[in-house]
Image 1 (cartoon, rainbow, N blue to C red):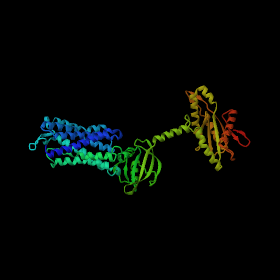
Image 2 (cartoon, rainbow, N blue to C red; image 1 turned 90 degrees about the horizontal axis):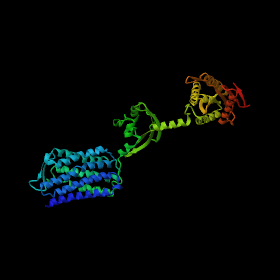
Image 3 (cartoon, helix red, strand yellow; image 1 turned 30 degrees about the vertical axis):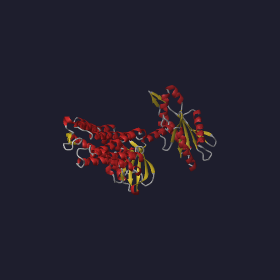
Length: 526
């Protein structure tokens, strides 16, 4: 064996041993690393097989052994570049679906079959024989059509992996750039070596690529130990930006569009990259058909926005703005759209359950007190009139006992609708409890309220309830109390006075209106 051949074998074995060491080292510590370690194990494992096959091929003494070890090389060599590509893609944050992962290994598998069966079809090597001048283990070969397809795939895998690493350079923090350099050199070294080999600038009959793979392996080993590759990795900006559920739109200092994420595109399907550089006001008009409802300014803010979506449904967004500083001290603005449609729907539902009577859909007792206390306070401060009415459905228990609770519920709804048809705007109408309702009138005197009360009573009396061919007459008893100008009056006092008047109206025969006279505490019958 001459010295050149010994040197070639030594370099190839060095590459093989380093890759084998990396494969086992990462495999043993895989539980301490990110999931990306599994792809690295696959990549270095295939590279090890390739290098060991190449080393034993140079120890061959006949054509049969050379063909056998060439086939062994193809167990690793065509699979290593796509595994390396997947490793780099995972490293920079690009997720690949399983079906695409499997498709990457289709051509390598075919290449393996082609080499193993080449004597039958000669599609991979047209000629594969011992070099007639230099002898074994040097090979004289002429490539076939499949070799061209195989070569293009291998080069493409390594080039795309290299390009992905270069593309992420600016977006990668300085602390992680040493790792990125390792990835770039790890892909670039075999590309350049293979290109030189195809140009005929390396020793004929010997594949030089496995001789230089130790360089890539050494850099990977250095990165693992010095820059914590696999333990701490940069996550690509795009992966984070596009995984955010909120829509993010980035504007420059002149409020022109410079970036948006995937969630924004899903919220606004008309948003396209062709809009980059356009003023946001023009873009928003294209997206919504209206002007942007808020003033854009370089400050933090938060607003709610309602939009009609493509299917005419109403969507509610919380729109937050935040100042942005990016490269070269340039300033801009972030617009963050959070879809709160469901949250608002639930909020309205809860508010409805908390403040509205489920049966009649008017205010309940809680809502009455919350709104009336404020109105009562304002009336007292402005010396405006404030009058309260209590309404009670006459003989309601008899309706329930005679016709059933369903009829009773229908009567409550019927009375509410009848009253609402003639109530003035601004009147606060609520179900106070059972068959009793309360009405507050700001700006009404007791005399004016008395007129309205008689209108309500007369209207309801002329509107009987019809259920299952039954006609049920309905009448109301009402008590009225007006707030006095003295500061001692409270809303509870007013309710008590109206209740006294209502009780008196029922005692005097029902279907009538009584007003509470505050000074003499006597009741005026109407």
